[in-house]
Amino acid sequence: MSGAMSRILILDDDEAVLNCFQVLLTQAGRFEIEVLNDSTRARDCIAAGGFDLLLLDMDMPEVSGMEVLRAARQSHPTLEVVVITGVGDVELAVESMKLGAFDYLCKPVDPERLVGCLDRALERSRRHEELSRARQQGSRQGPHFQEAFKEFVTQDPALMQTLSEVERIALSNNSVLIRGESGTGKELVARAVHRLGCRADKPFVAVNASAFASSLFESQFFGHERGAFTGADSAAPGVFEEANGGTLFLDEVGDIELPVQSKLLRVLQSGEYYRLGSTKKRAADVRIISATNKDLEREIEAGRFRRDLYYRLTISTILVPPLRERKGDVELLAYYFLDRTCARNGKRLKSIAEEVMEVLEGHDYPGNLRELENIIASAVVLETGDVLSLSSLPRELRATARERVAPAEVRRTLADMEAEHIRAVMEYTSGNRSAAARILGISRMGLHSKLKRLGFEADAANGNGNPRAPGSGAR
Image (cartoon, rainbow, N blue to C red; front, top):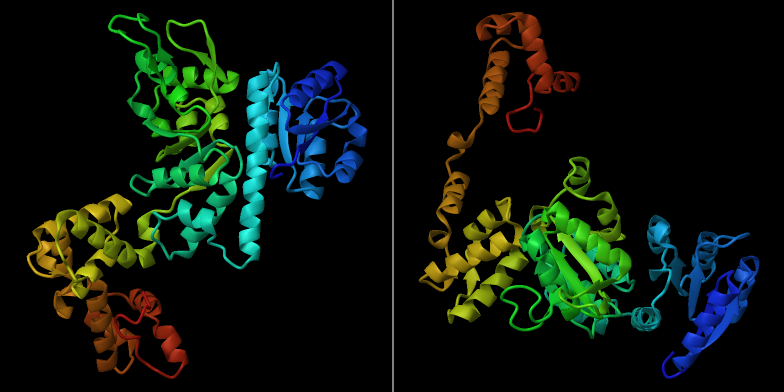
């Protein structure tokens, strides 16, 4: 496809639609077009044609568009597919994208939007080929992958698998929902999706979606003309216009008010909007990536989030793991943040003390990466030596350190002490349970239950008349 005409097959049972599309795309001057109005011949035509893209109508007799799509994904998985559907078949279109279609357009199709969509689909195909060649050369972290994930510091297998999924999702035009706790790096994932996608050379615009009140939504998202309302002294673009052709990242999407959800859904369904005070229609040509730390399914059940908007946003989903599930990454991240903070503050710290690292690795991090970064940043400012020490950590973490270095007898639990006492009594009575129960002040059955819990039964079967020692794991 480098410099050559891209071959496109248009499949629709309506001859008038086929003629319209053929004329429009031929005039674009970069597509070689073939049309087909008989869906029963689709499989053979796709197999014989060597097409780069399939423009596919969903509503056809004999063999439906969905059946054609399934067959195409199985026999020609690299063939890009753009779906044409009626407004009432949005769920069907969403399902088609989950099967691998690049995008869907609702009838009547805007010519400019159609051509732009086909260009992006073909660009994705080109990028996919480049990444495949890089992998065949034995380098998984080719130039695209390395650049896109340069901000990720990890050796965690689960997160590496997630990043691999991100790479594949990025090559689609799907809307993406990124889920994860606060501070896990959801915006970093969104930026990686953008860098790897076919809109990488277009803008990436990030907004905190929850910050927009219903009354300000149109102005902030769609823009306004001069004089559209009191105080509008000049025209201003909205975020859809700023992100035109690129990616719009909606952070905290689970916190959007219901009236704003309705307005957002309307523009996502129609693909168009008007500036406040204008009658000129504008195309909302953006890829939507959203993020939330909320359980949206629960929000839907509670009536706080629209189910139809949820389906629009979640064609592809990425789950970012919390830091507490990435224990092997804590040391890597701690030194990464140490170097970065030292550079910003003109300080030179050689390392992190071993006892500090033990505390950091044992912490639960409810604030995730952001919390670890703040801990390191605070400690670097307070540290007077050349090694990050316990005295520089926040007070609550120093308290954790004191607990860790407490004497062994202080750290013993009641369960440990009970097990040790029962063991001593059993040794004193030479294993006589009745005598031991009287000394312990419990019933013989109660003693039997405790001995079983402590592993005495297993030890006795091995010829050892004593229960396991405290701390042996038999609790």
